[in-house]
Every structure is written in C-alpha cells, then in structure tokens.
Length: 143
Image 1 (tube, helix red, strand yellow):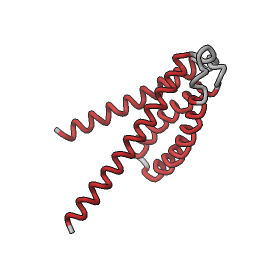
Image 2: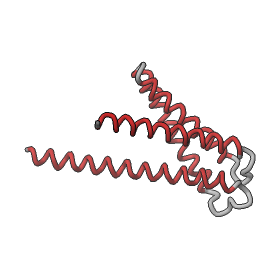
Image 3: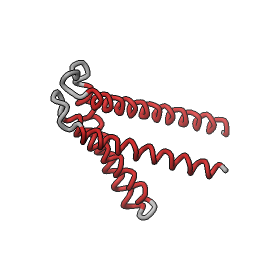
Image 4: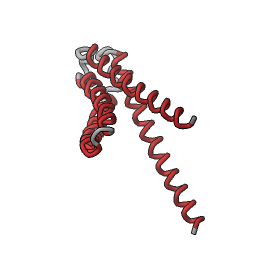
C-alpha cells in the first residue's frame, strides 16, 4: 500500500512539474512583447519552462542510461541556478515600477514562480539541516 501511494505521489509531482513548465512557456510566448520595462521577463519564463520539461525528460532517461543522465542533470542544474539568479534580478529589479510598463499577469506569474522557488529552496535547506542534526543525535546515542 505504501509503495502504491509513493508512486501516486511521484506521478502527481511530475504532472505538476510538467504543468508549471508548460504554463511558463505559454505565458512567456503569449506576452513576449508585453513587458517594455524588462523585456527579458518573458524570455526568463520561456527558458525556465523549457528547463522544467528537459529536467522531466532527463529523469526518464535516468532509467535508460544513468551516466549520461547524471552528466546532463549536472549541466542543467548549473545552468538553472545561474538562470534563476538572473531571472530574480530581472523580475525583482522592476518590482516598484512594472505597472503600466509590463503585463500584470505576466509579471505576477513570474514573481510568484520565483517566490515559490525561493520557498522550496528554503524548505529544502531546513530539511537538510534537520535530517543532518537528527543523524548526529542518533549517531551519538548509539555510541
């Protein structure tokens, strides 16, 4: 039963990942000329959406060729981190002045995506610290 629920969770997570990636591509495409103040915001969404989809396919490729997939995932991860920082600068630098110069839906979508990514990174770091401290506590008790 636990295995079935884990599979359902993974499938649901992948569907959300794909859906968000497609939504980013659609928003970036529809509004590619609707942000005069920072024309790279639609580009940021397009590329980030493409990265989401490529990441999904590399996860599938891991089943076929583990070595190739790990190399590709490393390259994608490095690029994604740099692109995330770049997109953050583009989006947050026009926070107080985007109205009237950038489509509101486009800007808010990019803004929310970035805030969610920052939140997930913070949650991930907290979990890593928590698991690390638990491991240390249990290791000390065993000795």
